[in-house]
Each structure stands twice: as structure tokens, then as C-alpha cells.
Image (tube, rainbow, N blue to C red):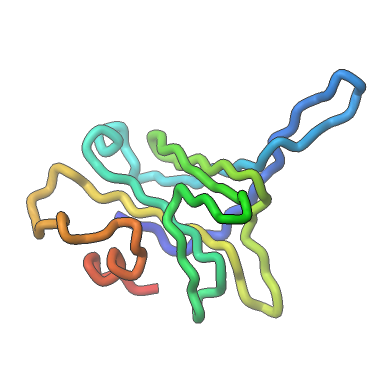
Length: 136
């Protein structure tokens, strides 16, 4: 089970300071995942990827991701939704008509017999895409 590449808006996570100001401590978003059931949460593997570039020239990272610059993004999976949290605003953006920073999730059921997935590096999006026969 997988989504297409999704446009995801992030919102600031703020705290109110004693002096009356507001400080942004991170950014969050929620992706609807209607096929992610409570049963699948108990038996499946949930993967999330970000395409940092545009679709015709993808640069894809598996989550959680920690960049050398200190930027990080992580996810949590719940029934029917996936929550994202980052220390930077990773909202999908459009520049010159091209979208950047889109997200995709994959739900790999663990209760279905099939090909051996032991040799697949699930952190390598290109290998996962080939293994599952995905098209962008």
C-alpha cells in the first residue's frame, strides 16, 4: 500500500514565553493514511520518504532523516494518519512551476506471504521502488 507524492503543509509548533513572546520550537504536519488500520499498525512496516527535489529529478531520503546541517525530520504512525515533526519548515513548495519537498508513505503488510524482503534495503528508496514495482 503506498501513496502518491503528496503536498504536505507544515505548521509551527510554538510555546508562549514568560515575557509574552512566542517561540517556534519545531514544525509539524499530519498526512491522512486512510488504509493504515490498527491491525496494520501491529503487523506492517510503515515507511515514509521525502523527495527534496522535483519529480523529474528526485532526491529522496527515508525518514527519520538527520542532515549534517542539523536539520531533522521524524514520523509517527497512528490509525489512519502519519504525523511528521521537524526542526525546519519542510512544507511542499512550488518554484518555477515545479514542486519540491513532497512526501510518500508505504505500508508493507507483515502478514502476507510473498517474496523474501530480507535482501531489500528499505532505507534506499530506489531499491524499494524496484522491489515493489513502483512508478513515480
